[in-house]
Image 1 (cartoon, rainbow, N blue to C red):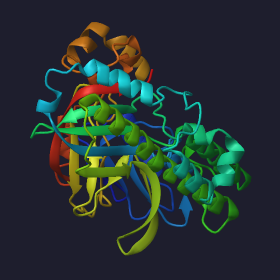
Image 2 (cartoon, helix red, strand yellow):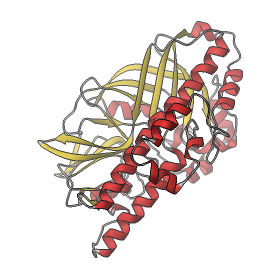
Image 3 (cartoon, helix red, strand yellow):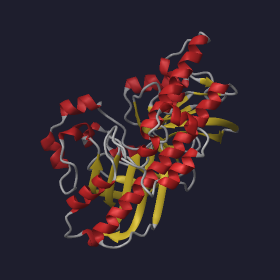
Amino acid sequence: MEKINDRLLSWASILEESTREQALRTASMPFIYPHVALMPDAHLGKGATVGSVIPTDGAVIPAAVGVDIGCGMMAVRTQFTAADLAGRDLDLLHQQISRAVPLSAGRYNKKVRDTAAPRVEELRATPGAGQADAVTGNWPLQLGSLGSGNHFIEVSLDEADRVWLFLHSGSRGVGNKLAAKHIRVAQEQCAQRHITLPDRDLAYLVEGEPEFDAYIQALRWAQRFALLNREEMMDRVVEQLGRFLGADVERAEVVNAHHNYTDRETHYGREVWVSRKGAISARKGEPGLIPGSMGTASYVVAGRGNVPSLMSAPHGAGRNHSRNAARRLFSRKDLDARMAGIAWGHSDAFLDEHPEAYKPIDQVMADAADLVEVRHTLRQVVNVKGN
């Protein structure tokens, strides 16, 4: 851990100067308490750094969560092993999953499925549903859809050759629109008060005011949507794996956790709002998920309860190159070689997800040694992504 100053601590051995400067701007905000914690996967983000933990007292920064509110991971360990997959065409399983879950940006369900209906009703009854309806009326059709970019569904094997199902997604279009709305409100509030900000996206809402309350309500609704979205997708993936292997799936272990969210927590003797933008909660013994990039390892972990990190850990590998840069730097031939032995989408659309577009996951995990304990190391055999 590096103490950059009294208000910024870093666990990142790979840290670009632009990322450090951005984090220093966030840490300079007057309501930060006790300090900002940079995770090993920290990289430049919009407004606030991806891979940062931002505790605030009396205010929240909507852009500190970002536009994919509640984005996170879900994993299920099944009763199956590599032997059950041996000799089977995993490309067929890839196709089955791709048909069961809408993939890519802007692609949703054509109707609310029976499995999703109870979840939709729960969300309709949750405070914040009115705000969701106001920004997009089709949010029920978004429940159970993956998205694009670094969102994925994977079938993996752990160190004991047990089969895991692993997926990454968030609150989809509805969460994006709710976040954008409240980021704009925060910017308007700061402008009206003639507040000079080190970055326009560090605009904040003041606790006790109606705009703050409206954002927290929308945030909590979107976080619940994201968690249920992952549950709905996992139900479909479980169903497809069961059909593929001809046996019902037993869920031996389940983890479902956010890595883009805000919650009320106590740190250093004070109750504060903790925004984790690309970071997971890692209290002592708390289960967590840290995915690598395409073709690399992912990890099931348990938190160590590290106090200076605000009991947090990285959420993944963290980008090393922008998407445009990755497309210039890497070839399809190289990506094919890196994905050898894995059933995947075989498309140039995934060049920006090349493993080397991200920090080395081994280095990230080495940096996180005092933050989490590795319980399982997973290797992919099926990787499903949206274009």
